[in-house]
Structure formats: structure tokens, C-alpha cells
Amino acid sequence: MSNKPIPCIVGFGGITPAGRGSHNLSYSRMIYDLESEKNKAQYLKHVLSLCGLIDETVETAEIDKFIKDKEQEVLKNTLMRKLDYEFFRETFWTYDYEMPANACGQLPFRLDPVKHYASRQHPKALGMSILGITDAMNDAGFDVRGAIDKYGRNKVGCFAGCAVMNMDRYSGDGLFASYPLGKRASSKHISFTLPEMTADFINAYVTGSLGITGHFIGACATSLYNMNAGVELIKSGKSELVIVGAAEAILGPPAYIGFSAMGAMATDQRMKDLQSLLGEGDELNYQNFCRPFGDNMGMVCGESAGFAILMSDRLAIETGANIRGCILNVNINADGNKKSISGPGAGNYFSVGKTFKDLEQVFGEKIFKDSCAFIAHGTGTPLNRITESHIMSTFAKEFDVANMPVTSVKSKLGHTMGTAGMDQLWAGLGALETQKLSGICTIPKLADDVFKDNLDYYLQDKEFDNRKDIVFLNSKGFGGNNATTALISSDLTRTLLEKKYSKSELGNWESKLSDTLSAREKNKSQAVNNDIQPIYDFDKDVLDLTDLKISKTNIVTSTGFDYELESDLSKDDF
Image (cartoon, rainbow, N blue to C red; front, side, top):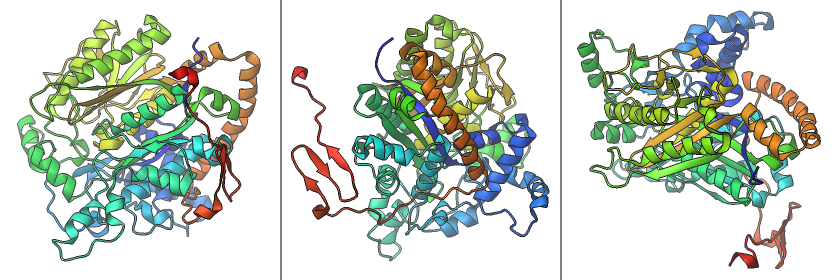
């Protein structure tokens, strides 16, 4: 067994159209009809609490009935639904615009994340980032910021941002519309527009990180591009703790104008035409607008934020972290020569095929027999259903995978652009931990041109027929950006750890892990009751140049941190 570090997922959180990404709360919504009554009740309460809709006048003894009575209201105000036009226009848009498409995956009810902390004209995506990273730290079950301080703020990595840009009235939209509307742009407009601002916010106001930071934009594959950066940083040994993620809030005129002009959107008119063709009636069902691998005509936009906390296996073992799974590698390939920038190419065949080879190399060819499922990019466009289904079917046959379960979470969440891969990740974690897969519930059947050999498309939520330990995550982006990885279950990750560590070392980890799991249970209760205080340390421990004591060997800060100046190079390297 190689001594190369294993990038372990020790926490995940976010703010999604289903609610909180932590503790599988959002995933409970995805498989709602399969959930226990206890999980349903916790889900409902967490959404109502998060959105400030718990009636404080209700007696404690009656709260369960109050929540149950709100069940249908919660279900109607989560996941894919009709755009809350009035709320968005009044809260986030700079100007009015008649939207050509009105289906979208929006945050629950009228959730405005920037109202949950002391924000100062923050764009929605950055508010989602603050709530999302705090949620991820809650999910971890241990003092993540304390671990960062102990490990070294100068050694922590962070890669996060969006695919397009921040584009509401406090960012890009407000900036570009200010002059034509006779208004003045603010001093914050242009900086808040920048795609990497999510990582900047996390470093400046949450972790105080002094380590490597950045954001890798790969269109709709952005999340997996950031995941690749984090995974490679850990595997290289340059960092043992990395935060990766994305936040995208594009439900507004600028994005809709652009995507509609491309002909890529599921507009109301196109859906009416499709429903007429299929004999589905004239009344639009906004919940079923996104139809991956079925008879479809375009994508549906969504908004979401998600963050994974990665640790090397060494640091995870040392801290007693809850290892929810691992990512061994991310494969990224461009499309090469092609006719149009939005058209398909060969790159995704390479990224998917190499991911299959990764698994074969580490676990052997028997791993494919029964153990894997596939969360497709699945945009809901005619071209995607053909090309991606051919890719999946081809490699399932080549690697002798029979009846590989396939789904697409965009059918319920919409296309959240840069955050799409993070949506796949929390859905993959939920699938492996519950052994239940969220299905493509928006289509009655597969389209005739979809490739089906060796694949089992889940058109409803259901339990796996046998245990799965691997979920493929696949992303395809405009411009030829393709990224694929495999999410490895906690149990299968354990088999890798057993090859590297002694029984005594694993015993020490398990002893600490029991405390982490106990804390995590309490943290879940906090998440359900919205007792998580968002971390936003504005103007805290800010350093002036005179606060630093600098020598050729180290830098000491007035806040008590002593950082050694180290080189990553060796004389033997060159």
C-alpha cells in the first residue's frame, strides 16, 4: 500500500434548494417518501426553523402537530418549483424583466441568507457561502477552526467560488446596470462580482487562513475542478486540510437573458410545446420542467452552495475525524477540436474512462460487479441525454458492469452551474449512507434515443438492490470542460486505512471518533433547530504590518501564532 495521503471527506454542508446540506438533511428531501417518520419530522422542522417560520407562540407540546400540519407547505416550497418572481425582483434584482422561464431550483421559501448574520450589502451567493461553510463545520462534529489553528493557518487550503459570477444587485447585475439606470456603482460592486470571492470570504471571515487559496473555473464542472485542486494538494503533501466548494446564485435577468439566447433553457413556451406534443395538457407543472434522459427541451437554472472539508488520512486519524468517505482522484479533460463551444466532444470519454481505471487499479476489477452507481451530469437537454448516456453505457459494458444505477439530481435541484458537482457530492454521500438513491422522478419513461445497455436508470426514488460503495460523479461544462471522480464510501475507505495503520492506531482513532460522533449528534439537533450561529468574524484579529515580527526563519503575529518559513523544495529535487 502506498504511503500517499488519502483525501478524506470529514464534513459537508451547504445551503441548497432542499435546505441544509449537512447531516443528510437535504438528502432527506430528495428521498422523502422513503424516509422514516423521525427523519421526515427532523427535515420539516429544520426547513421551518432555517426560514424563520416556526411559530414561537406554539406550545412545546403542540410543536410536533404544528410541524406536521406544515408538511405540504414545506414540500411545495423546496426543490424545483415556480420562480417566486415578486420576492426575487424586490430583493435581488436591479431592474424588472419578464422572465422567459419560470421554473427553477430556489432556496426554501423566501430564504435570504444575508439576513442571518451582520452582512453589509453582501451578494446572495456570499451569504450562502457564510451559512454553507458554517453548516459544513457543524457537520464535521469537531472544532474545525481549532484544528486549523493547531495545524497551522498558513498550511490550510481553500478553493471555492462560482462558475459565472456573482450577479445580483449587490454584485455584477448592480455594477453593469448602475450607469444605464442613472445610478452610482458602490465601492464593493466590482470586488463582490469576482468569482473567487467565496474563498476570500471564508479565509477572511471564517478560518483566518493564511494558506494556499484560489478558485478553478470550469463552467458547469467548476465544483469538481476545485475538488481536484484540494485532492491534489493533499496527495502532494503540501496541505493536509483543505476546504473545497462553490456557491452560485444566478436566478435573475442576466443569466436568463444569456441562457435563453443560447436556446439552452426550458422556457415556459418550450415546455408548453413539449407537453402538447406528449399529450400532457396545457397546465404547466413547474416541478417537472427538468427531464434528464427523457423527452426534454432544455435545462432549468438553480441556486445552491456546498462545501466539503477534506483532510489527509493522517490528520483525520489524529483528530478523530468522522471520515464520511474519500476522493482518490479527479480526472479532468478538455474536449479538443469541435464545431461549437457548447457542443460535445471527446473529453468526457477520457475523464469517465480514466475514473473507471482508477477504481480498477486500486480495488481490482471485481469492484464493478455490484458496488457502483452513477450520478450523471444530466442537464435535461436533448444533446446531453444522447452523449452522456452513450458514455455511461460504453464504459459500463467495457468494465463489465451490469445494470449500473443512474440518476441525475438536476431533475429536482435544477442546474446550479458551478455548484452542480457539490450537489452531486452531498447526494452521493446521502446515497451511500442510506443506500437509497434519489431518482429522476420527472419523466414517465426514457427518450427513445437514450443508450440503455448495462444501465439501470432510476425513474423513482428507491433502495439499491445490493450494497453500493462507490458513486461516480460526472460533470460536463460549456467550452469543453469535463471532470469525473468516484466518491468512495466510509466502509471502503476503512479498508484502505486498515492497510496503512496498525490496530492500535485505528483503535486510538476510534476512541476519539466516538466523541466526534456524539458531538455530531448534538450538532445535528442544532441544525434542525437552526441554533447554528453563522461564523462571520468581521474586523476580528486584523493584523497591521507593525503587528508582525519577521525573521528569515519565522513570522510571529500579535495574535499568538508563530509560523515557520519553510520551503517545499529540496536540494535533491533539481
